[in-house]
Length: 105
Image (cartoon, rainbow, N blue to C red; front, side, top):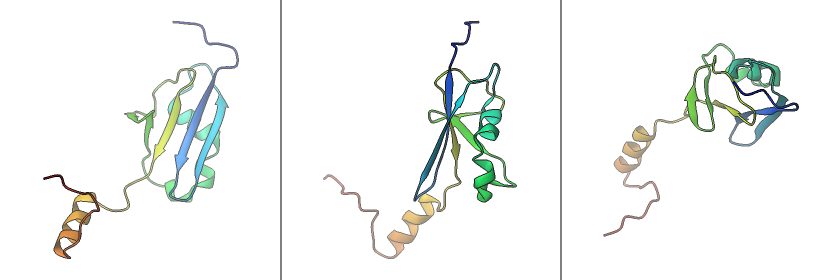
């Protein structure tokens, strides 16, 4: 295994509709995604995450919380969708509306 670079860093990101939190941390040897999230302090400032399993990823790809990180990784905490997109389309169609996308003919 390659030796870790001195000063290697990772990021933890949690994005809300009105703000985003991105915390940069030093990469510890064998640091997992969950350890990085805990070290970031984001959980303490996001009560909506308490008491539910975390959906996390690295650059958009879902990973387990035990995933060992590499230098430069960006750990992302995903929020549950506030609205089921299929249900939203059905509601709009029933009301005679659209999702705003133009259809080509």
